[in-house]
Amino acid sequence: MEHAYQQEKAAFEELFLGFEKWRNADVVSCLNTLEDSKRKALQLVSKDGENVTEYFDKLIHTLEQKKNEILSDFETLKLVVLQTYDPEIKKLSMVLEEQKRALRIAESFKDVSDPLMFLQQMQEFREKLRIIREISLPSRPCMDVSPIIQNFDTKKWDSVKLKDVDKILTPHENCTSPFTKPKYVTIQPDRKLINGTTVLGSLVDILLKEGFRLIGTRTVSSEEKVESYTFERIKRPQTLTINDGLRTGHANHQTKL
Image (cartoon, rainbow, N blue to C red):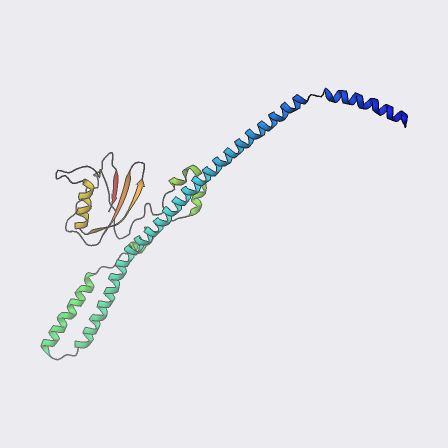
C-alpha cells in the first residue's frame, strides 16, 4: 500500500507540472475563433434565409397578382360571351314570338267574310311576315365558340421560368366575337387637335355618338404606358370611317373596337 502511494504521489507531481505548462491561451484563442466563425456563419444563414423569404414573398405576390389578373380576364371573357350570344338569342326568340303572333292573326281572320276587316287583318299579317323575313339568321361559323373560347391549358405554364411569371399572357388576350370583326387603332392619347381636345377624348366621344359603348379597359404594358379600350357596337352607325393603316411609331394607347 505504501509503495503504491509513493508511486502515485510521484506520478501526480509529474502530471501536475505538465498540466501547468498546458497551452491554455491557445485553446482560448481557438475557442474564440470558433465562436466568432459560428456567429458569422449563423448571420450568413439568417441573411440567406431572409433573402429566400423575401424572394418567395415577392414571387407569391406576383403569382397572386397574375392569378387575379387571369381570373379577372375570365370574368371579362364571360362578359364577351354574354354580349356575343345574348343579342342573337334575343333576336331569334323575338322571331319565334312574331311567328306565333302571325299565326294567331292568320287563324283569327282566315274565315272572316267582312271585306274591310279582312283587309285590315291581312295588312297586319303581312307586316308580321315582313318583320320575320327581315331578320337574318346567324351563320354557322358565328355559332362556333372557338373564336371566343380558345384552347386553354394550364400545363403550358409548366415551362415558364419563375422570373417570367409576370409575362404570362391572359387567356382572352386575342379573343374576338364571331359576330364582329375587331379593328385596332393605335394613337397618341395626349396629342392635341386644332380645337384643343386630345385625340383619345375626341375618338371616344365619336365612338359613343356613333353607336358604340365602352365595355372595358385594361393596362397592356405599364412600362410602355399602353392601355387597351374595348368598345361594343350597340347600334349600326350612320358613317364611321377608320383607317386601318393609321398607326404612329410611338403610341401610348391602343383602342380596340
